[in-house]
Image (cartoon, rainbow, N blue to C red; front, side, top):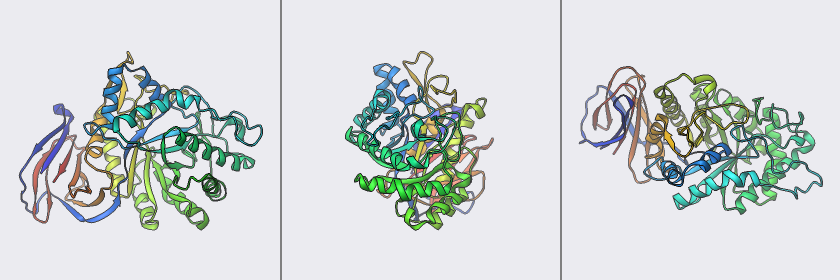
Length: 440
């Protein structure tokens, strides 16, 4: 059995050791059940934002190579999926859209200059490093200002009813343009955070409005554009409303046929039970975690251990309750936590140093790696039972048959654990504030 450990207190990151399997007793057990399979995993990734592309562009050539390896190689986080934005988002240099004004109803003037400046070069370099075209999830933050009730891309507002068809056609056109440029667009969310009126790029939809837009406009537009391979996910917002939102939208049979799954964020707490409720109610639909980060407005003073444990705790809970794909937020930010055109600064697993030509990995990077490095695309989440609430654990079985168990200790004390299956396993001590991955 192989054990990989990260222990911040001892400056240990991804230290691997091998131990012999032994007969195990009944105490301190973390029982693993590889035969009890749950959702199948689609992959791990992060967001290719304009901010990340801008910071990447400033790195030295050598740092760019190391950055790409850190995220997209098997020696790094082994990311195989990614997310990017339609039009601008808050993590960028300002508002922009591919069309500023619809004059003739044909979207003839379609300008991807801003996406081509910073976002697409980073995605293409990641493709080259991996030797494959990772699947990309697209999300809009706001339609162009002229389509909205408030006349601007920021500060919420709604999509004007008379522009629903045009906006759906716009989204389809955006996808086709990116596909023509070589991007492997496979997933689409309807709207980033549709219940949030933000000072940055935002647009609100009620559940009824989102359902109707998918049913009557977006789904048909993708079909008309021969983009049926692009899978639509709804919600793309916080977990506390996942079940209510999912049932409200998926309750319409005509909308449901266009919908692949439900996307969610972490900013209002755990609410893991809601994910399981959606899984049980709609077992044919996928749950994707599409965004989470440590916001400086709320957690600026948290230490690096607390920030890393936020990631691991949320990932464990999500995977135990049905999530099949994980997208972190920005891949790279500057030393302030930007650029962000409204000052909404946040942390990222990798951040540029002050001189901007080099970067540093934060502890959260290593905690994410305990999942993404070892859980393969096509793996199944499996059942795990633990002897106490102080040990957080989740298990997977890879396509090769390898079993992967991730264990998190957020306590101030060391915890003894026996990881076992049918009387065989290994004994280990999970140090205080550490994370371990067991593979066999």
